[in-house]
Image (cartoon, rainbow, N blue to C red):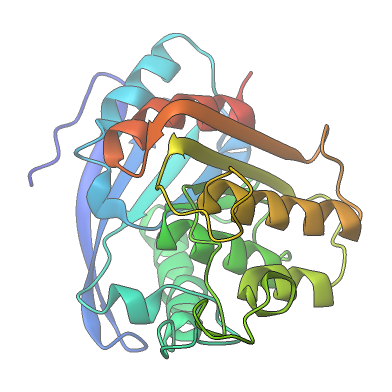
Length: 270
């Protein structure tokens, strides 16, 4: 895909040969052309960057900048590799099938290869703040990165996040939601970090599964469980967490495209 520079956006595709991931990582960058004060520039790293073209992400940014509704953002959309289910997950623990075993390496790629590249390539010494977002498994990965690196990132956006990620098969007689959902346990056993903000999007048509038969689909149940753990840890539902539930939302790119402007306004609205 050839990125096209819009009236307010400098867009370019860059490849990084990652030592940690042992692959050539494709990344689409979107930078507003006119940033009067570079100290006010923010960074948004997006997992599953291969979805951004389909959702018209550049047009979303153009419209928001044209309306002067968001602060300037340098956005980096990282394309997932062939081993996506191994690179995305929870860095501290693979799931019950061993998926996510390289999530720690993916995080290291962002911290030790991507960020230094951005600082050097764009001649930036620091950002006002840094955030990370993603879709489905990429949304799970985004929250894990934020939670484990609050010294680097202050906000995350999770669209249809895979918070079912579990250490025991749900069909196993010993399975327990309160013990075996991995991200919820990571938060429960972690500590409160002042200043973190969380955005969660779910759709009522994300899926049809309802393992506890409570009339609520699992994706919403699992996301609400993450939010409950964050609140128990000390975060405010009103001030620190935004939950966007879309009645007709599906587990697909058009739904995430519809939610994206809301996320961007939530995070960087003027």
